[in-house]
Image (cartoon, rainbow, N blue to C red; front, side):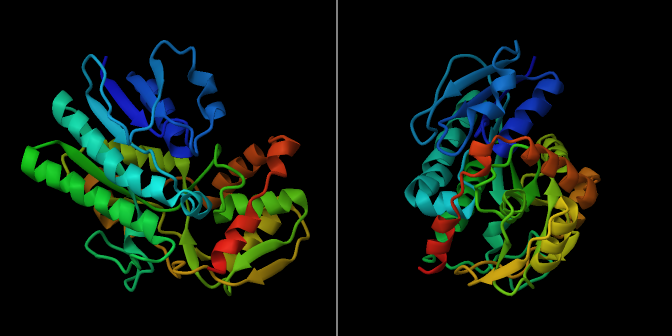
Length: 328
């Protein structure tokens, strides 16, 4: 049985990856320090014979006995509310944490896949974004702690690949959604759905003409799985190129949730990207991958998940923190 270590295992994407690899017959070691992860995301795995969990901060030294075949590095804050609250930890997990995992991969002769992000492109001047675009990032802006952590993560990963011969893969993840997202994490899908469920007006930051492209989690996991077992070491975009403006998306949410909320507008956050659309030509050619789940279906599944949350989870809001960030 092949053994895989998944960091950030209690997070949104990490927990879905644990499920997929167990389903594929792997022994999964999940690792998380719960700084943004949630134990409930992996509670269903706690007694599974092919799952082991280790509570650990990967910015500290990592080692354990036995063989290890694969490592998936998904430990990192991933939403503005998170990485603006804990900027130092965000930088450390992208730098020290990645360094530790690269050392572990080298020692165990394991293949390492790192979760990079479309944020390496910053507020892009090229549209759609291809893997060859170097990006437009404000290194000292409030979002720079996340953007630069991921850019450094890519750089050190390629350095270990070239200098030490470590087998590495880099996935650049575009906006992904689905069950197990945190309702209060500040990203547009849980924010809109949470507001609709609470009977609040939907808040758009800026004029609503900025665009996003949303990929359902099952499609994202499939792309990551295929990339891990490919022979390609340079970055690959995995996302859904079906682009929509935030204004039109808010109207979709109102229609989906059958609510009568108004849309209100607030000031656009500093360095918030105005366009986000992946060019997935490489993923199609290299991995024979493209997203299969329609936004209509994916949103229905996600909304049903949020509807089942408790009142305590539903009304635990952190929007004030995000508003404060906008003013900085």
